[in-house]
Length: 243
Image (cartoon, helix red, strand yellow):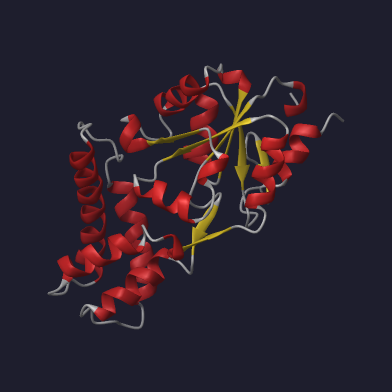
C-alpha cells in the first residue's frame, strides 16, 4: 500500500547515520585519539579497529539498563561504552593510558562539532513540519544525543525523542516503538519510521506495526521487503506519490 493512501500523522527518524553522521569515521576518530594517548599504530590498525567494533557491537548486550535516576543512567551508558571500546582495544592492542583515552573520546562524541548534518536534513524536516506532521526520534543513541541535537539545530523540529536507555528497550524491540507511539497518542498505522538499519529500523518498526522506510545512501540493498530511499527528501515523494 502507498504511504500517500495511509493516515500517516507521525514520522519517526533514527538519529546517527540518518539525520547526521560523524565527521570522518568512528574508527578514524578512535584511532587518532588512541595514538595521542600512547597506542602503537600498525599498518592495519584502522581496518582492525573497524572489524573489532563490528564484532564488539554484535556481542554486546542492548543498551538497556535497570536504573532510572539520571546520574546512575549516565554512568550505566558510560560503562556500556567503556566495555565496547575496551573490547575493541583488547583485540587490536591495549595501552597504558587507555582509561584517560576513553574519558576523552567519550566526550568527543558528545560534542556537536564531531557530527555533521546530511545536506537535506533541515529542508526535509522543515517541509514535514509545514505539512502538519508530528516528528519524533527513535534511537539507540544514549543521552548524549540531546546535546548533539541542540548543537546541530535539530532539537526544535522534534516533538519527542525516545532513546533506548530512557525507554529501557532498544531497537529492534517493539517496545521502544510502542513507547514512542504512546507519546503521540498514535496507532502504529499512523506512523512511519525512517532509518539506515535494516534490522533495527525497518524490521523493528514493521514488527511493531509501523510503516518503515530504509535510508540506503550507498545503494547496498536491492530488495528491502519494504520501501527504500537514497536521501531523506525522498520521504516527501513517498508521502505524495499516488500513482
